[in-house]
Length: 120
Image (cartoon, rainbow, N blue to C red; front, side, top):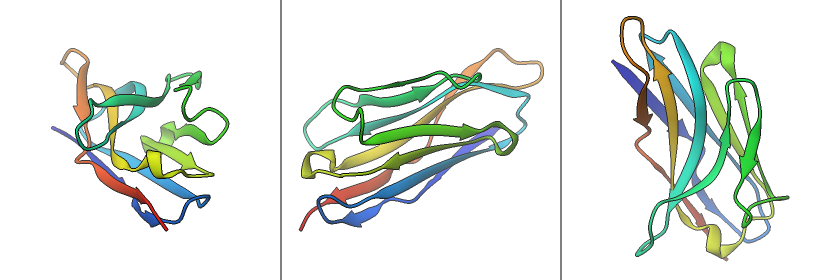
C-alpha cells in the first residue's frame, strides 16, 4: 500500500509564510503528477497547484506569485511554499499523488489533510 504523510500546517498571521510537505511511503515504483488541493468550510475542494514528474508546474490564479510547488523525486516528496498568506487561504490542505506500484495500474492517493489558518 501507499501512504501520503503531510506536515507543516498551522496558525499564521496575514502576510506570513508556511511550508507544507507531503511524503509518499510504501511500495512505490514511480510517481506521476503530484498536487496540493484545499477545502474551506462550506466550499468544494479546489486545486491549488500541481507539478509533473518532469517538474512542470501550474498554480491556481488565486495563489500565483505567492505559492510555489516543488518536489524531490528522490524523496517522493512534494512541497508547497506559501508566502503572503491571506485569511482567504484558510482551509484544510490535501496532497495528491498519482502513484505507480509494480504490477499495478497507476492510482490516485490522498493525504490526510493539514489545517492552515490565517488569522490575526
